[in-house]
Length: 226
Ligand SMILES: Nc1ncnc2c1ncn2[C@@H]1O[C@H](COP(=O)(O)OP(=O)(O)O)[C@@H](O)[C@H]1O
Ligand SMILES: [Mg+2]
Image 1 (cartoon, protein in one colour):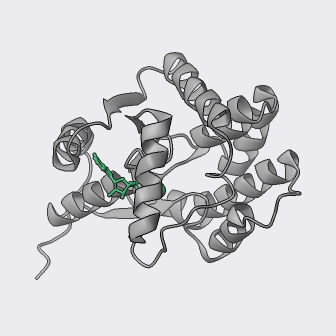
Image 2 (image 1 turned 90 degrees about the vertical axis):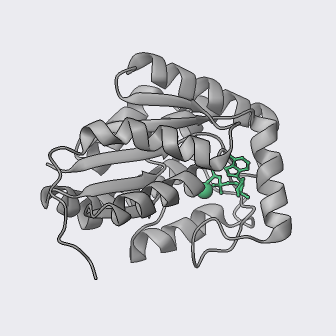
């Protein structure tokens, strides 16, 4: 039931921008849709997010980090994602479990089987129907993020543009993460759509919508909103 779509890719690749545009387009077309993000998306999850991104938390052990992400995800799946999918709606999520494999697995060197087991507990095995990978050079993405921070434009309504503990890791780390995403895509090519993020925002949005459209047939539209 329902359709579950996630956005993945390095920082600054345009995930939040594209997730929001897809959300607005689907809503305008009359589809039942919600947009959420990881870590966060629930009251409890947003509190966990604050712990994760805090630049002062330099002492955080990798296991703690992994379990906090997973705790936030467990709350999101049980409070928001599953209930909404079970009503037949569309759930858009800005990052999901793939980010754990890429960042904590390939990036920090955590054991992938262990992460798989933790993720299965957190999600109850729920994986997306479709995952977009917004492909961008790590340095270009970090440049975009820095420029965004300097303009202080929010990456989501109500959120401040943030430079956080996870963004602040070194370039080699971010490059391992990208290599990790490529591995993940190779393992499950049917679920992933890899699109170049070096295109105008509207062009990319149109490509994303074209990939999503075929999945919409079973989704009942809401009545006209006046
Ligand atoms: N296709 C694009 N081309 C140029 N800049 C973009 C593009 N998509 C997003 N941006 C800009 O890059 C910055 C990061 O975008 P954002 O959507 O927050 O990325 P992410 O959520 O992947 O970190 C923002 O300032 C945004 O306006
Ligand atoms: Mg974002």
